[in-house]
Length: 123
Image 1: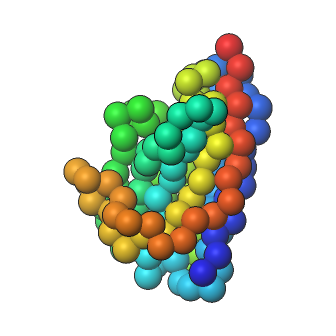
Image 2: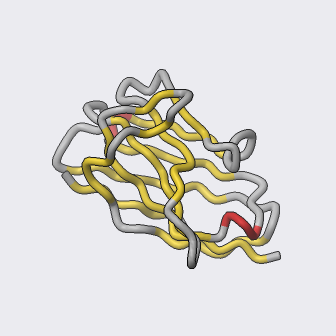
């Protein structure tokens, strides 16, 4: 089970980025996929997840209204579209596999982590 996150970069406040998570070693529709982020000196925060079927998603308050998660089962990919980015969104973003994602509680225990991709938002 391997996950590869990509799509990070440097963007000005108000801009957009689309993160991608490529899954190998398993079909992405077997697991729910979550996105976490970790800023320097802060704990890792779960910001979004999508169920294995794609019919349920979760957003942390910090992501609601600005981020959208989606999955392409045929390509074994999960995407995180991030709009109206703010300097507080600066962090390393990780995708992860979990067996559970619920609209209220978010992701369950993580089975596998991908490597991170850096997102930097300048003011």
